Length: 210
Image (cartoon, rainbow, N blue to C red; front, side, top):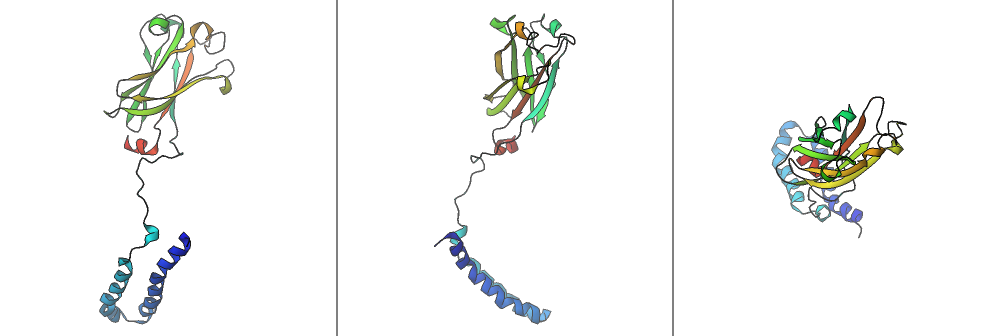
């Protein structure tokens, strides 16, 4: 017996009772309905006491696996006076991106970080405010090809990492510094490099929790 047939059989008593009660509701006066209310209520309670197997299902946890994922939240960070920024060892930070109670920002070393200083642009994503426990988030960092503004030529790095407040994840060797201008990512005229970053929770359950 298929689910549809089973459901039909289980709803038949309720439909039969409704057909029996409806004429009384139309024909009886208010006083008669009040006097019969206990009897009518008892009939419906008897139907509802019988368990309906078709509606007994396995509970679904709120963090169930789903192919539907939240959209990315994103913002753009323009590094102005890039040549001047390269002369400093300190990182520069993007304006914060507020997402569902979390605060994200890019941490960029224009002249590279640590052993790659002078050779690579280093880019990291930092969770600067959020929940106390460690959680996984998906993120993308993109560098705009300013010579053509062709999205297909943008440099994109994406990954998923476990973040806790104050922690950074990213790329020490994001892109070679000596190729930035020649390959169209450093605008020589404006002396700018444009970065975009995107971040999202891997599930809607986690997004609502945040």
